[in-house]
Image (cartoon, rainbow over all chains, first blue to last red; front, top):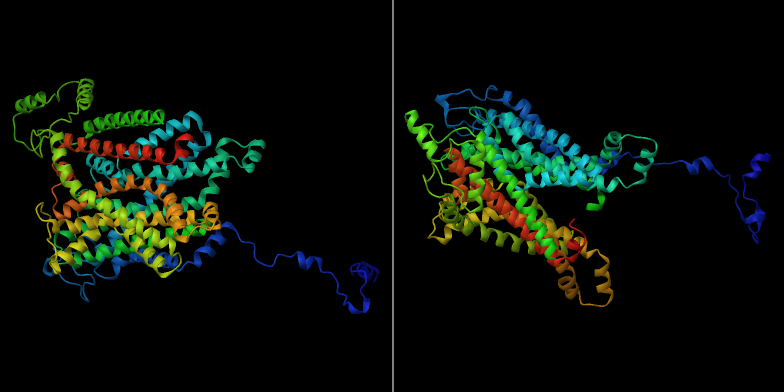
Amino acid sequence: MEAMKQQYVSPQDITGVDESLLILTPLHEEASEKIESKNTSFWSEAWINLRKNPLAITGLVLILIIVVLSIVGPYLNGGGDYAAQDLMNASQLPSAEHWFGTDDIGRSLWVRTWYGARISLFIAVVVAAIELVIGTTYGGVSGFYGGTLDIIMQRIAEIISSIPSLVLLTLLLVVFKPSIPTIIFAVSFTSWVGMSRVVRSQILKYKEYEFILAARTLGASNARLIFKHLVPNVVGQLIVVVSFSIPSTIFFESFLAFLGLGLPAPTPSLGILISDGFKSMLLYPHLILIPALVLTILMISFNLLGNGLRDAFDPKMK
Amino acid sequence: MLKYIVKRILIAILTLWVIATVLFGLLQLMPGGICDRAKLPAEVCDNVEAQYGLMDPLPQQYARYIGNLLQGDLGTSLKVQPSAPISEIISSKIVVSMSVGLPAIILGVSVGLFAGIGSALKRGQWLDNGITVLTVLGIAVPSYVFATILQYVFAFKLGLVPIIYSASNMLSMVLPVFALSLYAISAVTRYMRTELVEVLGSDYILLAQAKGLKHNTVIWKHAIRNALIPVITVVGPLSMSILTGSLVIERIFGIPGLGNVLVNAINSSDNTLTLSLALFYAALNIAIILVIDVLYGIIDPRIRLGGGK
């Protein structure tokens, strides 16, 4: 009883108020200190922000649909063999038998489109992974150590980026002959520079912060500082760069195919299909329109998702 | 200011030299030589190679190559236009490419600026949303997809304009220019919108409004002028992307420009021509970046006084 009493506001504290007017309630200190909403982590907050953006979600859903179709699509109609020819049924319009029609030597466009999407996406994802590793390391080291090393590394990056990337790509593919590994090599050769710049500028910003000083005081090594303390802070930015890098790789690949530097026949990619379709565009427009439509949807979806991710990770940018 | 310009020019020259050296290295790796596919006895081949100095030791070839470059001599084309000087090929073809590229840049920047300003001033309204959707389309869809669709609809189905480019017919330039400029329009619009929105939220605009200036004066004299400065930086990379983008656009519309020459050089493995064109594109890129940087330094003193970045 005595303990209970102490938790009441004593009427004497409130001067000039009649005690009978007051309703005395006990203090619930625990209740008022309790945090009602759930503790939002970095990822769940980004997801919540992203979910509010209908365009980004549309992009995400479309990408998922295309990814699923590129995996299972070829087996749904036409047998799954992208090189199987059926000369009796060449150059057909879309029908119940061949959902997207057939090309000039009777290969099912449905199979080739989704198989091509698979290859285009595969190239883009591998390039993004390589870009992530090289760009983060290069930009991290350059930004973290600064000084002469930074100047030299930035000069090298500047030289690579001052050859227009499409010209450099064409040269590399002329030397190395197009195939999936060489296209991956050539595209990543030019594209890591952008990633390294983003990482470098972010590292330059964060390395002055107190938490880095604290970690350094505790004796953390430089490698630990870069990869355990600095890079996790730029993860949001990295995801945004990757979401824009994937469509640009798909674009580069299709651009090269259009110049005659695509994958050798009969392997399809979206670029190859569009380039092939262009040759008979006036007679059979569906041969170019369908792969071009898939490519366009993929590019737009990645751009929408990228914009949404940028806003989600950094609401200030909105 | 002069010191800044001289420093930038020296860096540009150094960059160009490194690129020339790398390209020379690539030339040695390139498959296909002057004699393949030509059914010639080995002695004749050797003679031809000796005539072009291809039998000399590499350092000597390299010295000659750099020496020739310094005199503006890019060598001769071996296959596309046999024994035509490459510098002449470039100067005659660049005119054709420019006649399409230049209008595309002008159209792209001017339309982009207005769309961006409109979008920023009407932020959140239907005009802004409409423009945003269009810019996403313009940035995401590759220019050659646009070009083929435009060509199919307007030239083939509707017959409004010629399908293939011809120098004498102005109408035939409409589609290539439009297809090339779409990306530029979208990029400039997006950039201008971001800059203007940021400027409109800044303290000096608040001050200008607080001083009681007219709304139009605030917008046109204070906001837009300041927002324009950073937009200058994207014009350089954009001009370059229009020039390289014309590689495919020239193929689609049959324009006999520089991009077309590069594609032919690649396909016929005319290695000297390919590399000279790559060097030319790189030099052009460096020159554009240099001019833009210097211009930027003149317009915005914060850049050169702040020591570059």
